[in-house]
Amino acid sequence: MPKTALIAGASGLIGQQLLPLLLASARYSRVIALVRTPLPMVHEKLEQLVVDFERLADYRQQLVADDVFCCLGTTMRQAGSREAFYKVDFTYVVELAKLAATNFGGQLLVVSSLGADARARAYYLRVKGEMEEAVRQTTFHAVHIFRPSLLLGHRATPHPNERLATALLAVLKPLLRGPLRPYRAIAADTVARAMLRAAEDDGGGIRIHPSDAIAREGGARISAG
Image 1 (spheres, one colour):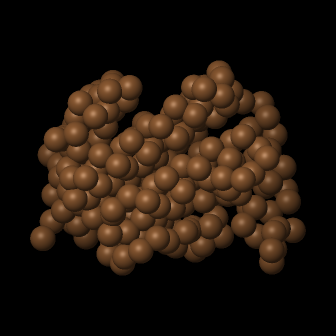
Image 2 (image 1 turned 90 degrees about the vertical axis):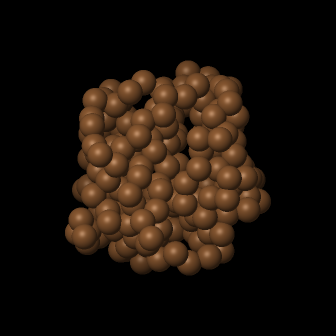
């Protein structure tokens, strides 16, 4: 039977690629998008739920879905402080996962990062690792954790360092082979397709999708049917 998908972070780099795929998929008859402000789009399957992520528990009864796609995330530069970064990349993500799981959500598909490790010295990777450990403890039938490398795609406010890193990785791509292959930059739409494919598998357990696997899983186009 057609299912319900819930997506958080639909306006972000990956989320804006994933939302149209969910709406086009025959798997879903309903797609709930958690947004801070309404998205400028209308679709017969789409339900936009404007939420205050600081009070996510207030919306518990509306966070009901078979597949929960979490694309929430920011950067230290965008967040402005460690505390603000932690709130978006750990608190919001984990609270959403816990609330949706208590509503008998079947699958959680969440974006993390290459190198995520709760014991990492780098704060960004440590927070991502702590988030992963927390969502692993939820009661979803399946938890899919995606660990992409540097993401390629249109950013509203690209940083010069991001442009430089993207250009450098493009030049180095032919050299990133074997054990270095996971460090290749990856397109946001490739990650989005890999997330939908993982949901369609309907398997159980905890599954980690490293960047090179994401590139394979999301490498081919998905048909609407």
